Amino acid sequence: MHYITDREYAVSILEWASLQNPGRWVDHSHYVAQAAETISIAMKQTGFDIDPNKAYICGILHDIGRYKGFTESVLHSYDGYLLLKKKGYEGNANICISHSFPIKTELIEAVNGWATIPDPIKNEMIEIMNNIEWTIYDKLLTLCDALAEANGFTIIERRLVSVAIRNGTTEDVPKHWKGFFENMQEIEAIIGCPVYSLFPGIEKSIYKPINLSN
Image 1 (cartoon, one colour):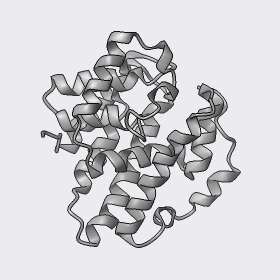
Image 2: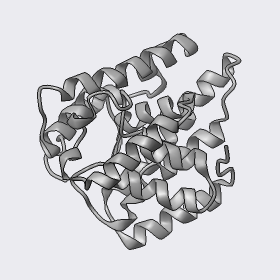
Image 3: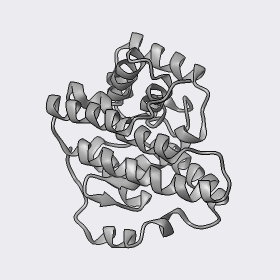
């Protein structure tokens, strides 16, 4: 499975995408990348087989599908997948999809904006997910997406509440949240410490105004 390994090339793709659709998502992508690198370095220090550079690049490109514009759904995941798959980087393409589905295809109808996505695309996304070999990178980037805002790092609980306020919620959405915490606990078992402890000052994020609109 091919991943981009050239950091400058990955950043250039993000810069291109930011010209197509400027927005907070670009800064968010940089923070996701930083979080992924920080956590993966801690994992590697325990002897775990992971590449921090690959993790960083996955973070830079996880939301690249937003180059097509804002959508009130996970359609950007599909657009990012198509873009990177066409370039020949299946590993990065898969993460564009997987980071939006913390419990994979379970309760998929509760995923943000799922009902608004055309049925043929829904079916294709489900098929893609069923064929993905979910790796530690998929789990790590799903976690880091929930740790990063456009202006820095935050606790997962705050990030999830912000997303729920901005995009709406249902009684099944909290069941998706479980996936973020399962990923965090799995990674914490590897590094032997709380993930939050890797980000000094992260607790101060609770004093910042929460994002209430997209």
